Length: 507
Image 1: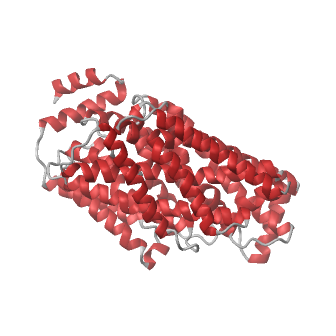
Image 2 (image 1 turned 135 degrees about the horizontal axis):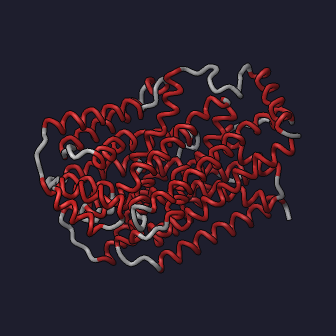
Image 3 (image 1 turned 120 degrees about the horizontal axis):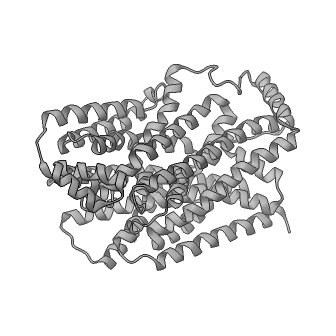
């Protein structure tokens, strides 16, 4: 059999395995809480691997190695910022958010948490948050589809549209029926596959080239040819550029598809184990992605081969260095990265459509009908995102960066304020959310974004506006204070009843 046949077999086996996992999840899904949040029964390692896999997407195996290949270590500041941001997210947001969302009327989405936490009877906060989720996640899901199209185009000489169709078809199948559990369980398998591939590709490539010394020599030769300095973290960089890269870490606090994993854990204390597993996975994966880009520079320099699209460096190396069966499994890791993120984002988008928009207009529904509506929501978002993915020249990194900034600026400061400051009001949250999201959106569509990443001004403006407006509109509410105290105690004790009693005594 040809190499491509072996690789195709490996990919098909992977896709069938994902469908099998999705079917198993389908058998364990019975109501809206199951479909949207897995019944709050995720183990810490599951939450960590799922958060990591759904976080990184095709960016980890396509965007980041491609950026390193094209520009060198100066692009690695993004990985540093993300790692620090992820650690802070697990440390300060995960336990408190897990506790607070249960205390506040068992909120199962970020928009519903904002509404319940801030006692917004007007529903304007929840609707606005739901719309922001839909807008930015549509771009985010679209980035995954573009990555899927590029994957099949590069790996199998397939048509871009065929690649998109396969990715959409399989991901939609296990997400549509398996819901949150389907997305999470497949994320765990995909996260393991991704980290294994990111360890294997650079190590085998280094051995093939002749050791690390030969890799460095190859990179320096390429630098002489191209007039760059790929091994420098700072050459050619600006302060604003480094700040922009590090600022990616700010986005973690506001990413619904990541922090919803915190809400789904069994208990707040699971965040400690989850943080250790998640950050270890992230450090290994990010290091592997950076090394893949650097090794790719040396390999293509020494072989005098050309690489038309830097974002395919991981794909090309895997096909060159491995037996077709192994290469097929490595390529499956790319699909894993793409599909894990799409599935997670589709679930959160569907929850915004159904839980945060449809149901708040007074539509009552049964548990069974709620699941059906969730599946319809998944389908609607998929269709719109597919239309945005019709441009094959779209940059995966650009699409991800835009959506990441939107969520980070609109939700990030509000999550932190809601969890750690009693003084946040619904009007402060609404003003901050709108101003932060609009700033990121407008800034990202101007030349200013090439100087400073839009998440920075968006995050700062959201934080300042929310704080100032909250001070102006402050109103004492003993019930809100009691819940705040209960969440604080519950996050440390894992005993919600004891937390409520203590909070009630101190409110």
